[in-house]
Image (cartoon, rainbow, N blue to C red; front, side, top):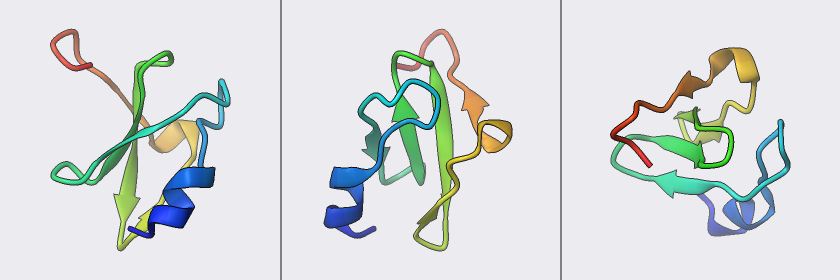
Length: 58
């Protein structure tokens, strides 16, 4: 995934910073406790597509 794109992407809900988890192909918003998928190097920034983080994930 392009590093420049990662610099400008924010959570669509709270506008907070996202952490890229390359191994899981996800962008994670810790305040919202959501993980947004990255498919074919394209982030899917839709709340309906995000998965909630489990209690052991942060």
